[in-house]
Length: 408
Image (tube, rainbow, N blue to C red; front, top):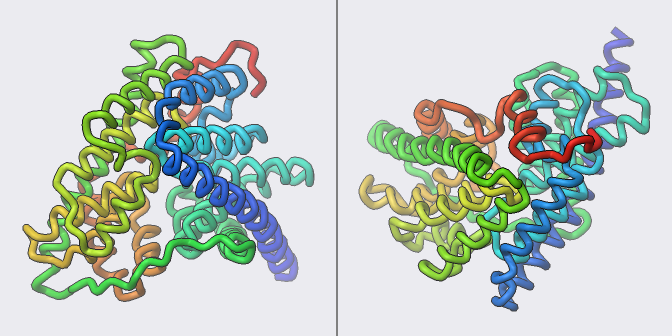
């Protein structure tokens, strides 16, 4: 009994250390992300440098990426079945690549960066501390909780996210994940970064709305399923058509600029104004979720790095606004539910997104969010946006055309 208690306390302490690393990394990233986004908005001509930025990112990952090119999928696969961990260079590479992409307007997210940095730094610290394989495997799961909880300000959802997505639900992992997520969040807040405040939304729920919410969930699931299929399809198509990997994000940048000239700049970067207005009840046009979908698939499918979650939030919130009137449901409520449901279905984490709904919009939103998220998950099926372990290794070693002899 004493040995078990001591072992649990050790994982709690190690998880807290992982949380400090995740919090520090997320704080630096979020502050720099705000800075580069403001810079792009103030100097609109920066977007024309997007193809060149794509070339720099492509060359960096082509020459130096190695296993780090596996991205979030690699971090998730190591949490699921730990092998060699995540390489230390993953953290600085994804930080620089994401900031460069956002500076020039690529439609990418931020959770992938936070999770990769948390995983990379935690595993590097574990190697320095000479921790054994079991401890490093547990910390690989805690790092997911710390990175996700810290970057979005949802520590409880971060814990559920780590436990749900890694599928290794042990007491040791839980003991490490809880302090990792809580400490990571407290570090970000304590250092002075302000997460966006989301107003509490009133979500009608009863026998008369249950079926309507389920129907909305089905539409969110279809969007998630298409997204989860479109990004890897685009990657495979680009890998076949463009053998030299660094050229792919250049083409992605050119296509993005072409789209921008046709439909405007609302879909560049994070596109948070689309999300914010949808949550405020401002009706979004039917084409908003479609165009954000296309811009994001082009960016991620051609090799820009960052994440999928925030674009999926935007797609879901806009889609929720679009389906609200036909279903006779309040627009802010449906945008809030769409925000969590599309991501939950695409990543196969409906429970984490149910908890996220409670943290972002109020505890009363959790039951309707659960209905919508489960309905969306039932439709999404297929692969998660975070590839299976084998697919992660293909991404790291194959489609990115890693230079022969590159360090692992």
